[in-house]
Image (cartoon, rainbow, N blue to C red; front, side):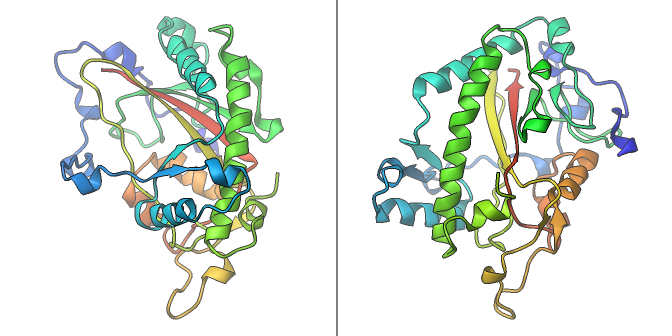
Length: 301
């Protein structure tokens, strides 16, 4: 991990670059790596899943069928009636928006390093001269408890730590519930995915899609995204479930790997979209949770 102690070159906050007449070259991705914006209606109908009945312990075949289709064909869906109060979600987004509106000197107090990424940052990966993303972020750990340190969380706004803690608890509950739903859909015991996560993507051996997703800069206002990562325990060997491997029809698509090994490759290379997925194919595809974290991204206009 020695090579990950420091960034290979000075880190420049994207916030300080806004207002320039042209975008610096190192933020311009080649055409092959840019989002492909389509206007066909079929690509706009992102699946929406209503969890109300399932959360009440009722059988909801429509919801289960929707989850099955979304996971196999999209790798992405929108949840409604998921149990996290709208007021809490608005408070979480609001408090982090206020943090990113603070003076840059205040935010730099929490500047991160590639060793853990926890804190305020503007780049992923230690590849020198890499093309960077147009956005700043704040990365923080939620679980396991030994990795969570409120001292590394912003002290301003004053309600940031309290609101983030409350929101985290609710999202963790939701993730645990979804793990049971996914286990059921895959024909596994309802605790199977959670147990493979290490107790307190990917296991499906490619049955579930892993979607490449991007955000697009809004020309009139900043964009803030709250990304919650429900990851495997760092040191547990991860590989496709034996129940979902059946050679020669469906051989194992990913070899065994720990989440620490996977995370190290990301920290060295940064996020590479589909190329990262191909690089780890026949390398990894399994999940696990006590390693839980947030990344709050802000994309300046």
